[in-house]
Length: 420
Image 1: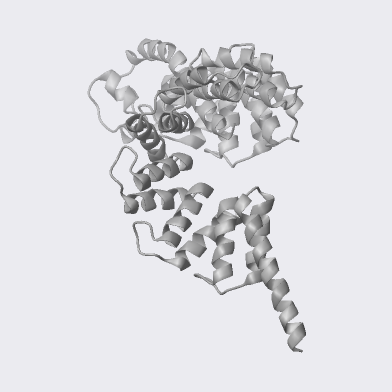
Image 2: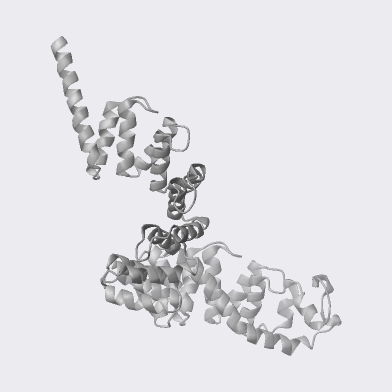
């Protein structure tokens, strides 16, 4: 959900700007012929090659002189020029001033733009309350992007008390205008039962409406529903299809899942080359699970020659993001000396990190290091503690080690008592 916020605002800002572009050009054309060298402040002109070029090169200090600034629509168009630096030097404070002038006249797009600038601190001090104020005005005036954004602010408690029910109410208003981000959010809320009673049928309906607009998060959410059998019969082929649609749009999680499905032969024949391709695409986007999966393929020589240094490189990249499988595998590589010199100190480091995140296998091997004093000072109490944690999380081998250590400890106590 977090990723939606900036994407949605940017997308609507661009789309609205493009929607206005035709009328902007017409407005320019109707006024440009009136301009001549005598009417231009040459201190603000960068270059002059005819009247249209002169207009487009005018410094922000003069643009407002050449458009009708009495209309909120025109004010917003001028503000857009300043905001995007389109033909003029970018000037965010000036853009905010002009948006405000249009906003107080009730123009929804200007209200939305001003609220957005307050939310980001662009050209004005960052102020969540003022952002909410202007975005709510735009939302009440029916602007779908503003309705969605106000829903987000209620969802995250940004400038207002967190309220999932209020978030749903605003998302619904935008979704009823077929706004794709809101359609996805409605599906998400019904799927999770957040702010509404969980309803997989309604979740699927909303998600498919968003997916029909090529919303990649909606496509991935549908894929998971089929993969996990959430409200539908489990169907890995349909899951694969929906992941594939999102992956083609560059969705990193979808690409990672396709990599795994090709590697494991789920819904498709096992194909290491396809797995490698999808893992690589996601890994290059910084997706930690894909980096770990790609590292494993280099470690085991799946689709590529065995390359443990390359595997370590990808494992370390994923580990830096907290990916626990990568941390565990790094620890095991150094513990076993697989393709590298054995380094029990490094093994203990990475196994500790993974074990602390609740990885049962890492806890088991870390306990083994403490039991034997490998890479760490020998400590039977710590060994027992890690074995017990691993046992609680389902590591079946840990129970045997616990019994053996406790038996040894009992014998040691009896020997001490007998000798005394």
